[in-house]
Length: 396
Ligand code: FEO
Image (tube, rainbow, N blue to C red; front, side, top):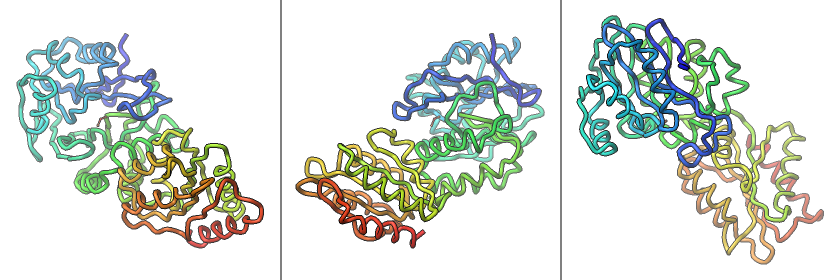
């Protein structure tokens, strides 16, 4: 049975949810699933915008045929060649040999590289217009949002921006296609932030560039390749993208991420959190051996102050913390205030390693000196936790 939804009488969502996926991009936990969106425009000519991941092939193809209602498919607009949107491209073309692919040159080359064969294609560049009848699609390149070949498409008739990965969200749609059909801020913003920060967070400058190009368009609706369609309160989400792409924190507050083997480092992290909360400072905590990195990276984007506490391990930083910090550095987070705590029963050196990794971040300011201790921090040194908390509070 088809699971399509109408956006307009002549724009149909023909995508699919996947709630069985364990790891998105083989890295990111998606406990609430993910949607792969595809859109069909029914005009004098018909055009499908992107395809879906291999895992949801059957329902996607059924949706497309149902929405076409026996019509031929004239165009397949390919905006992004990552296989979660292109894996079923050939499946569509086999069923619709009359269909012409519409893409830019980089995408065309990637189709050949991924699929091992050239397809019948109309190569477009920025500003070109594809006339479907009433609808007119124009194209805007969006390199590194989040691959180099990406382009987005704008329907000048309906004001619909087909935004590729931009403005996506983790989480299956579960029947609700539009963001205004759910309490997005309460129930999905965290997943939207986690999606943004981990997928395109490294490419803030390129996202800013796309936002600049988009600001010149009269956008009434945003249709991303994952998550909800936006038709109301679009500025709310655009403003979030403006913050995230500028690496500006959403909250003045503290994220504490700690690596603790037997609980003594965790104890100091907890004591610091108590001091901060007593002062009215918002504070969240992650055990780096429990929280998957994507959640910690999302909070590193969200909060103004970051505290990393690590036990010393193999003469360096505890492995899960070391991996996390490299991951944070790879996402180009900048402009944060950072405090460090280290533990080591015979040689506490974790702070040195953490400092080396974090020093590669731009506009980072270290708050105070690392709080260093061996084995466990005794009551006689509580004043040092108080002092670190005080320095953090003063800098917020
Ligand atoms: Fe959802 Fe970059 O692919």
